[in-house]
Length: 368
Image 1 (cartoon, rainbow, N blue to C red):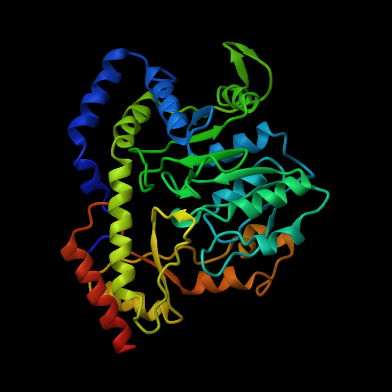
Image 2: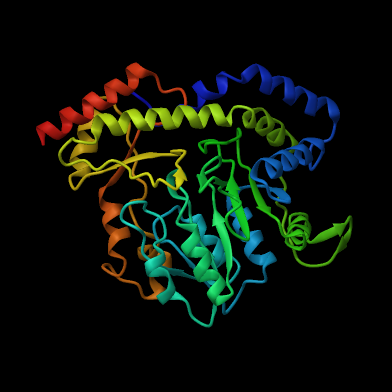
């Protein structure tokens, strides 16, 4: 089977370096919010050209803490995309606010600015665009709308570490940005991890308080907070991975270019669109087909792994039935949920494996 993702292969390339750094952490006797976390925050902030980076336990917490630090809660609304992982909407609900869904662009799959403005009400406090699959959203237009209505922009950049929009890093395109370091992400660790980046020092100070039980001084609590700290072990691993991220992303881009060149003219298959304004880092490489289920079934029989991202839009999830959305409300996102599928993509996918995938896709389409 050609795997969709091969984490073992990827981490084995840096296993020696990781073990050496883990040993240093163990020997230090300091395992929570120590020197490795501080160094990781500094290096990420410098790389993304922002003033502050605050490491937390995971990407979902990054979203939750950012919303809470901005004072967003009960009675407030946050506009976001219906076509992404559940955590984006979940974080909005978790702080007591209401997610409002706007349809996505049929080419980039990201939040469509043309659908955004009509969703804004007097209760709207923020917009969360998601840089889906590694390609940044149309941030100029989204920021323009946010400024018009005095709204916060919180980038969900969990799938887009290293991506750029008009030469600016994802994470430096709004008021704050959230990253996930889940193992499958472009920059991932051997477990959970997350980070918020911003150039708002006041926000960063609130986030640092929130992540340690609402405490800015040990045993003195200014507010109700969370236990959401990135472990030193994960920070040490991420510092090693950070040295490889450009190489890994370059490999992903090269693989994506070959896929696109080979599959662009295959009838019944739509390859990803890449905006000229963006560097797409291909967290996932997704194709579209109106015969998705038949194609993926054929590929799986031919030993090619596939994945469905995402089979049910957020506005149609059972938990959000009370919001009153129905099928047909957000047609572009709904069509994508029925047609998109991911094929193998990771930095160490070999040329032979990729050729096998391409051959199998062409064979599948010809037989259907």
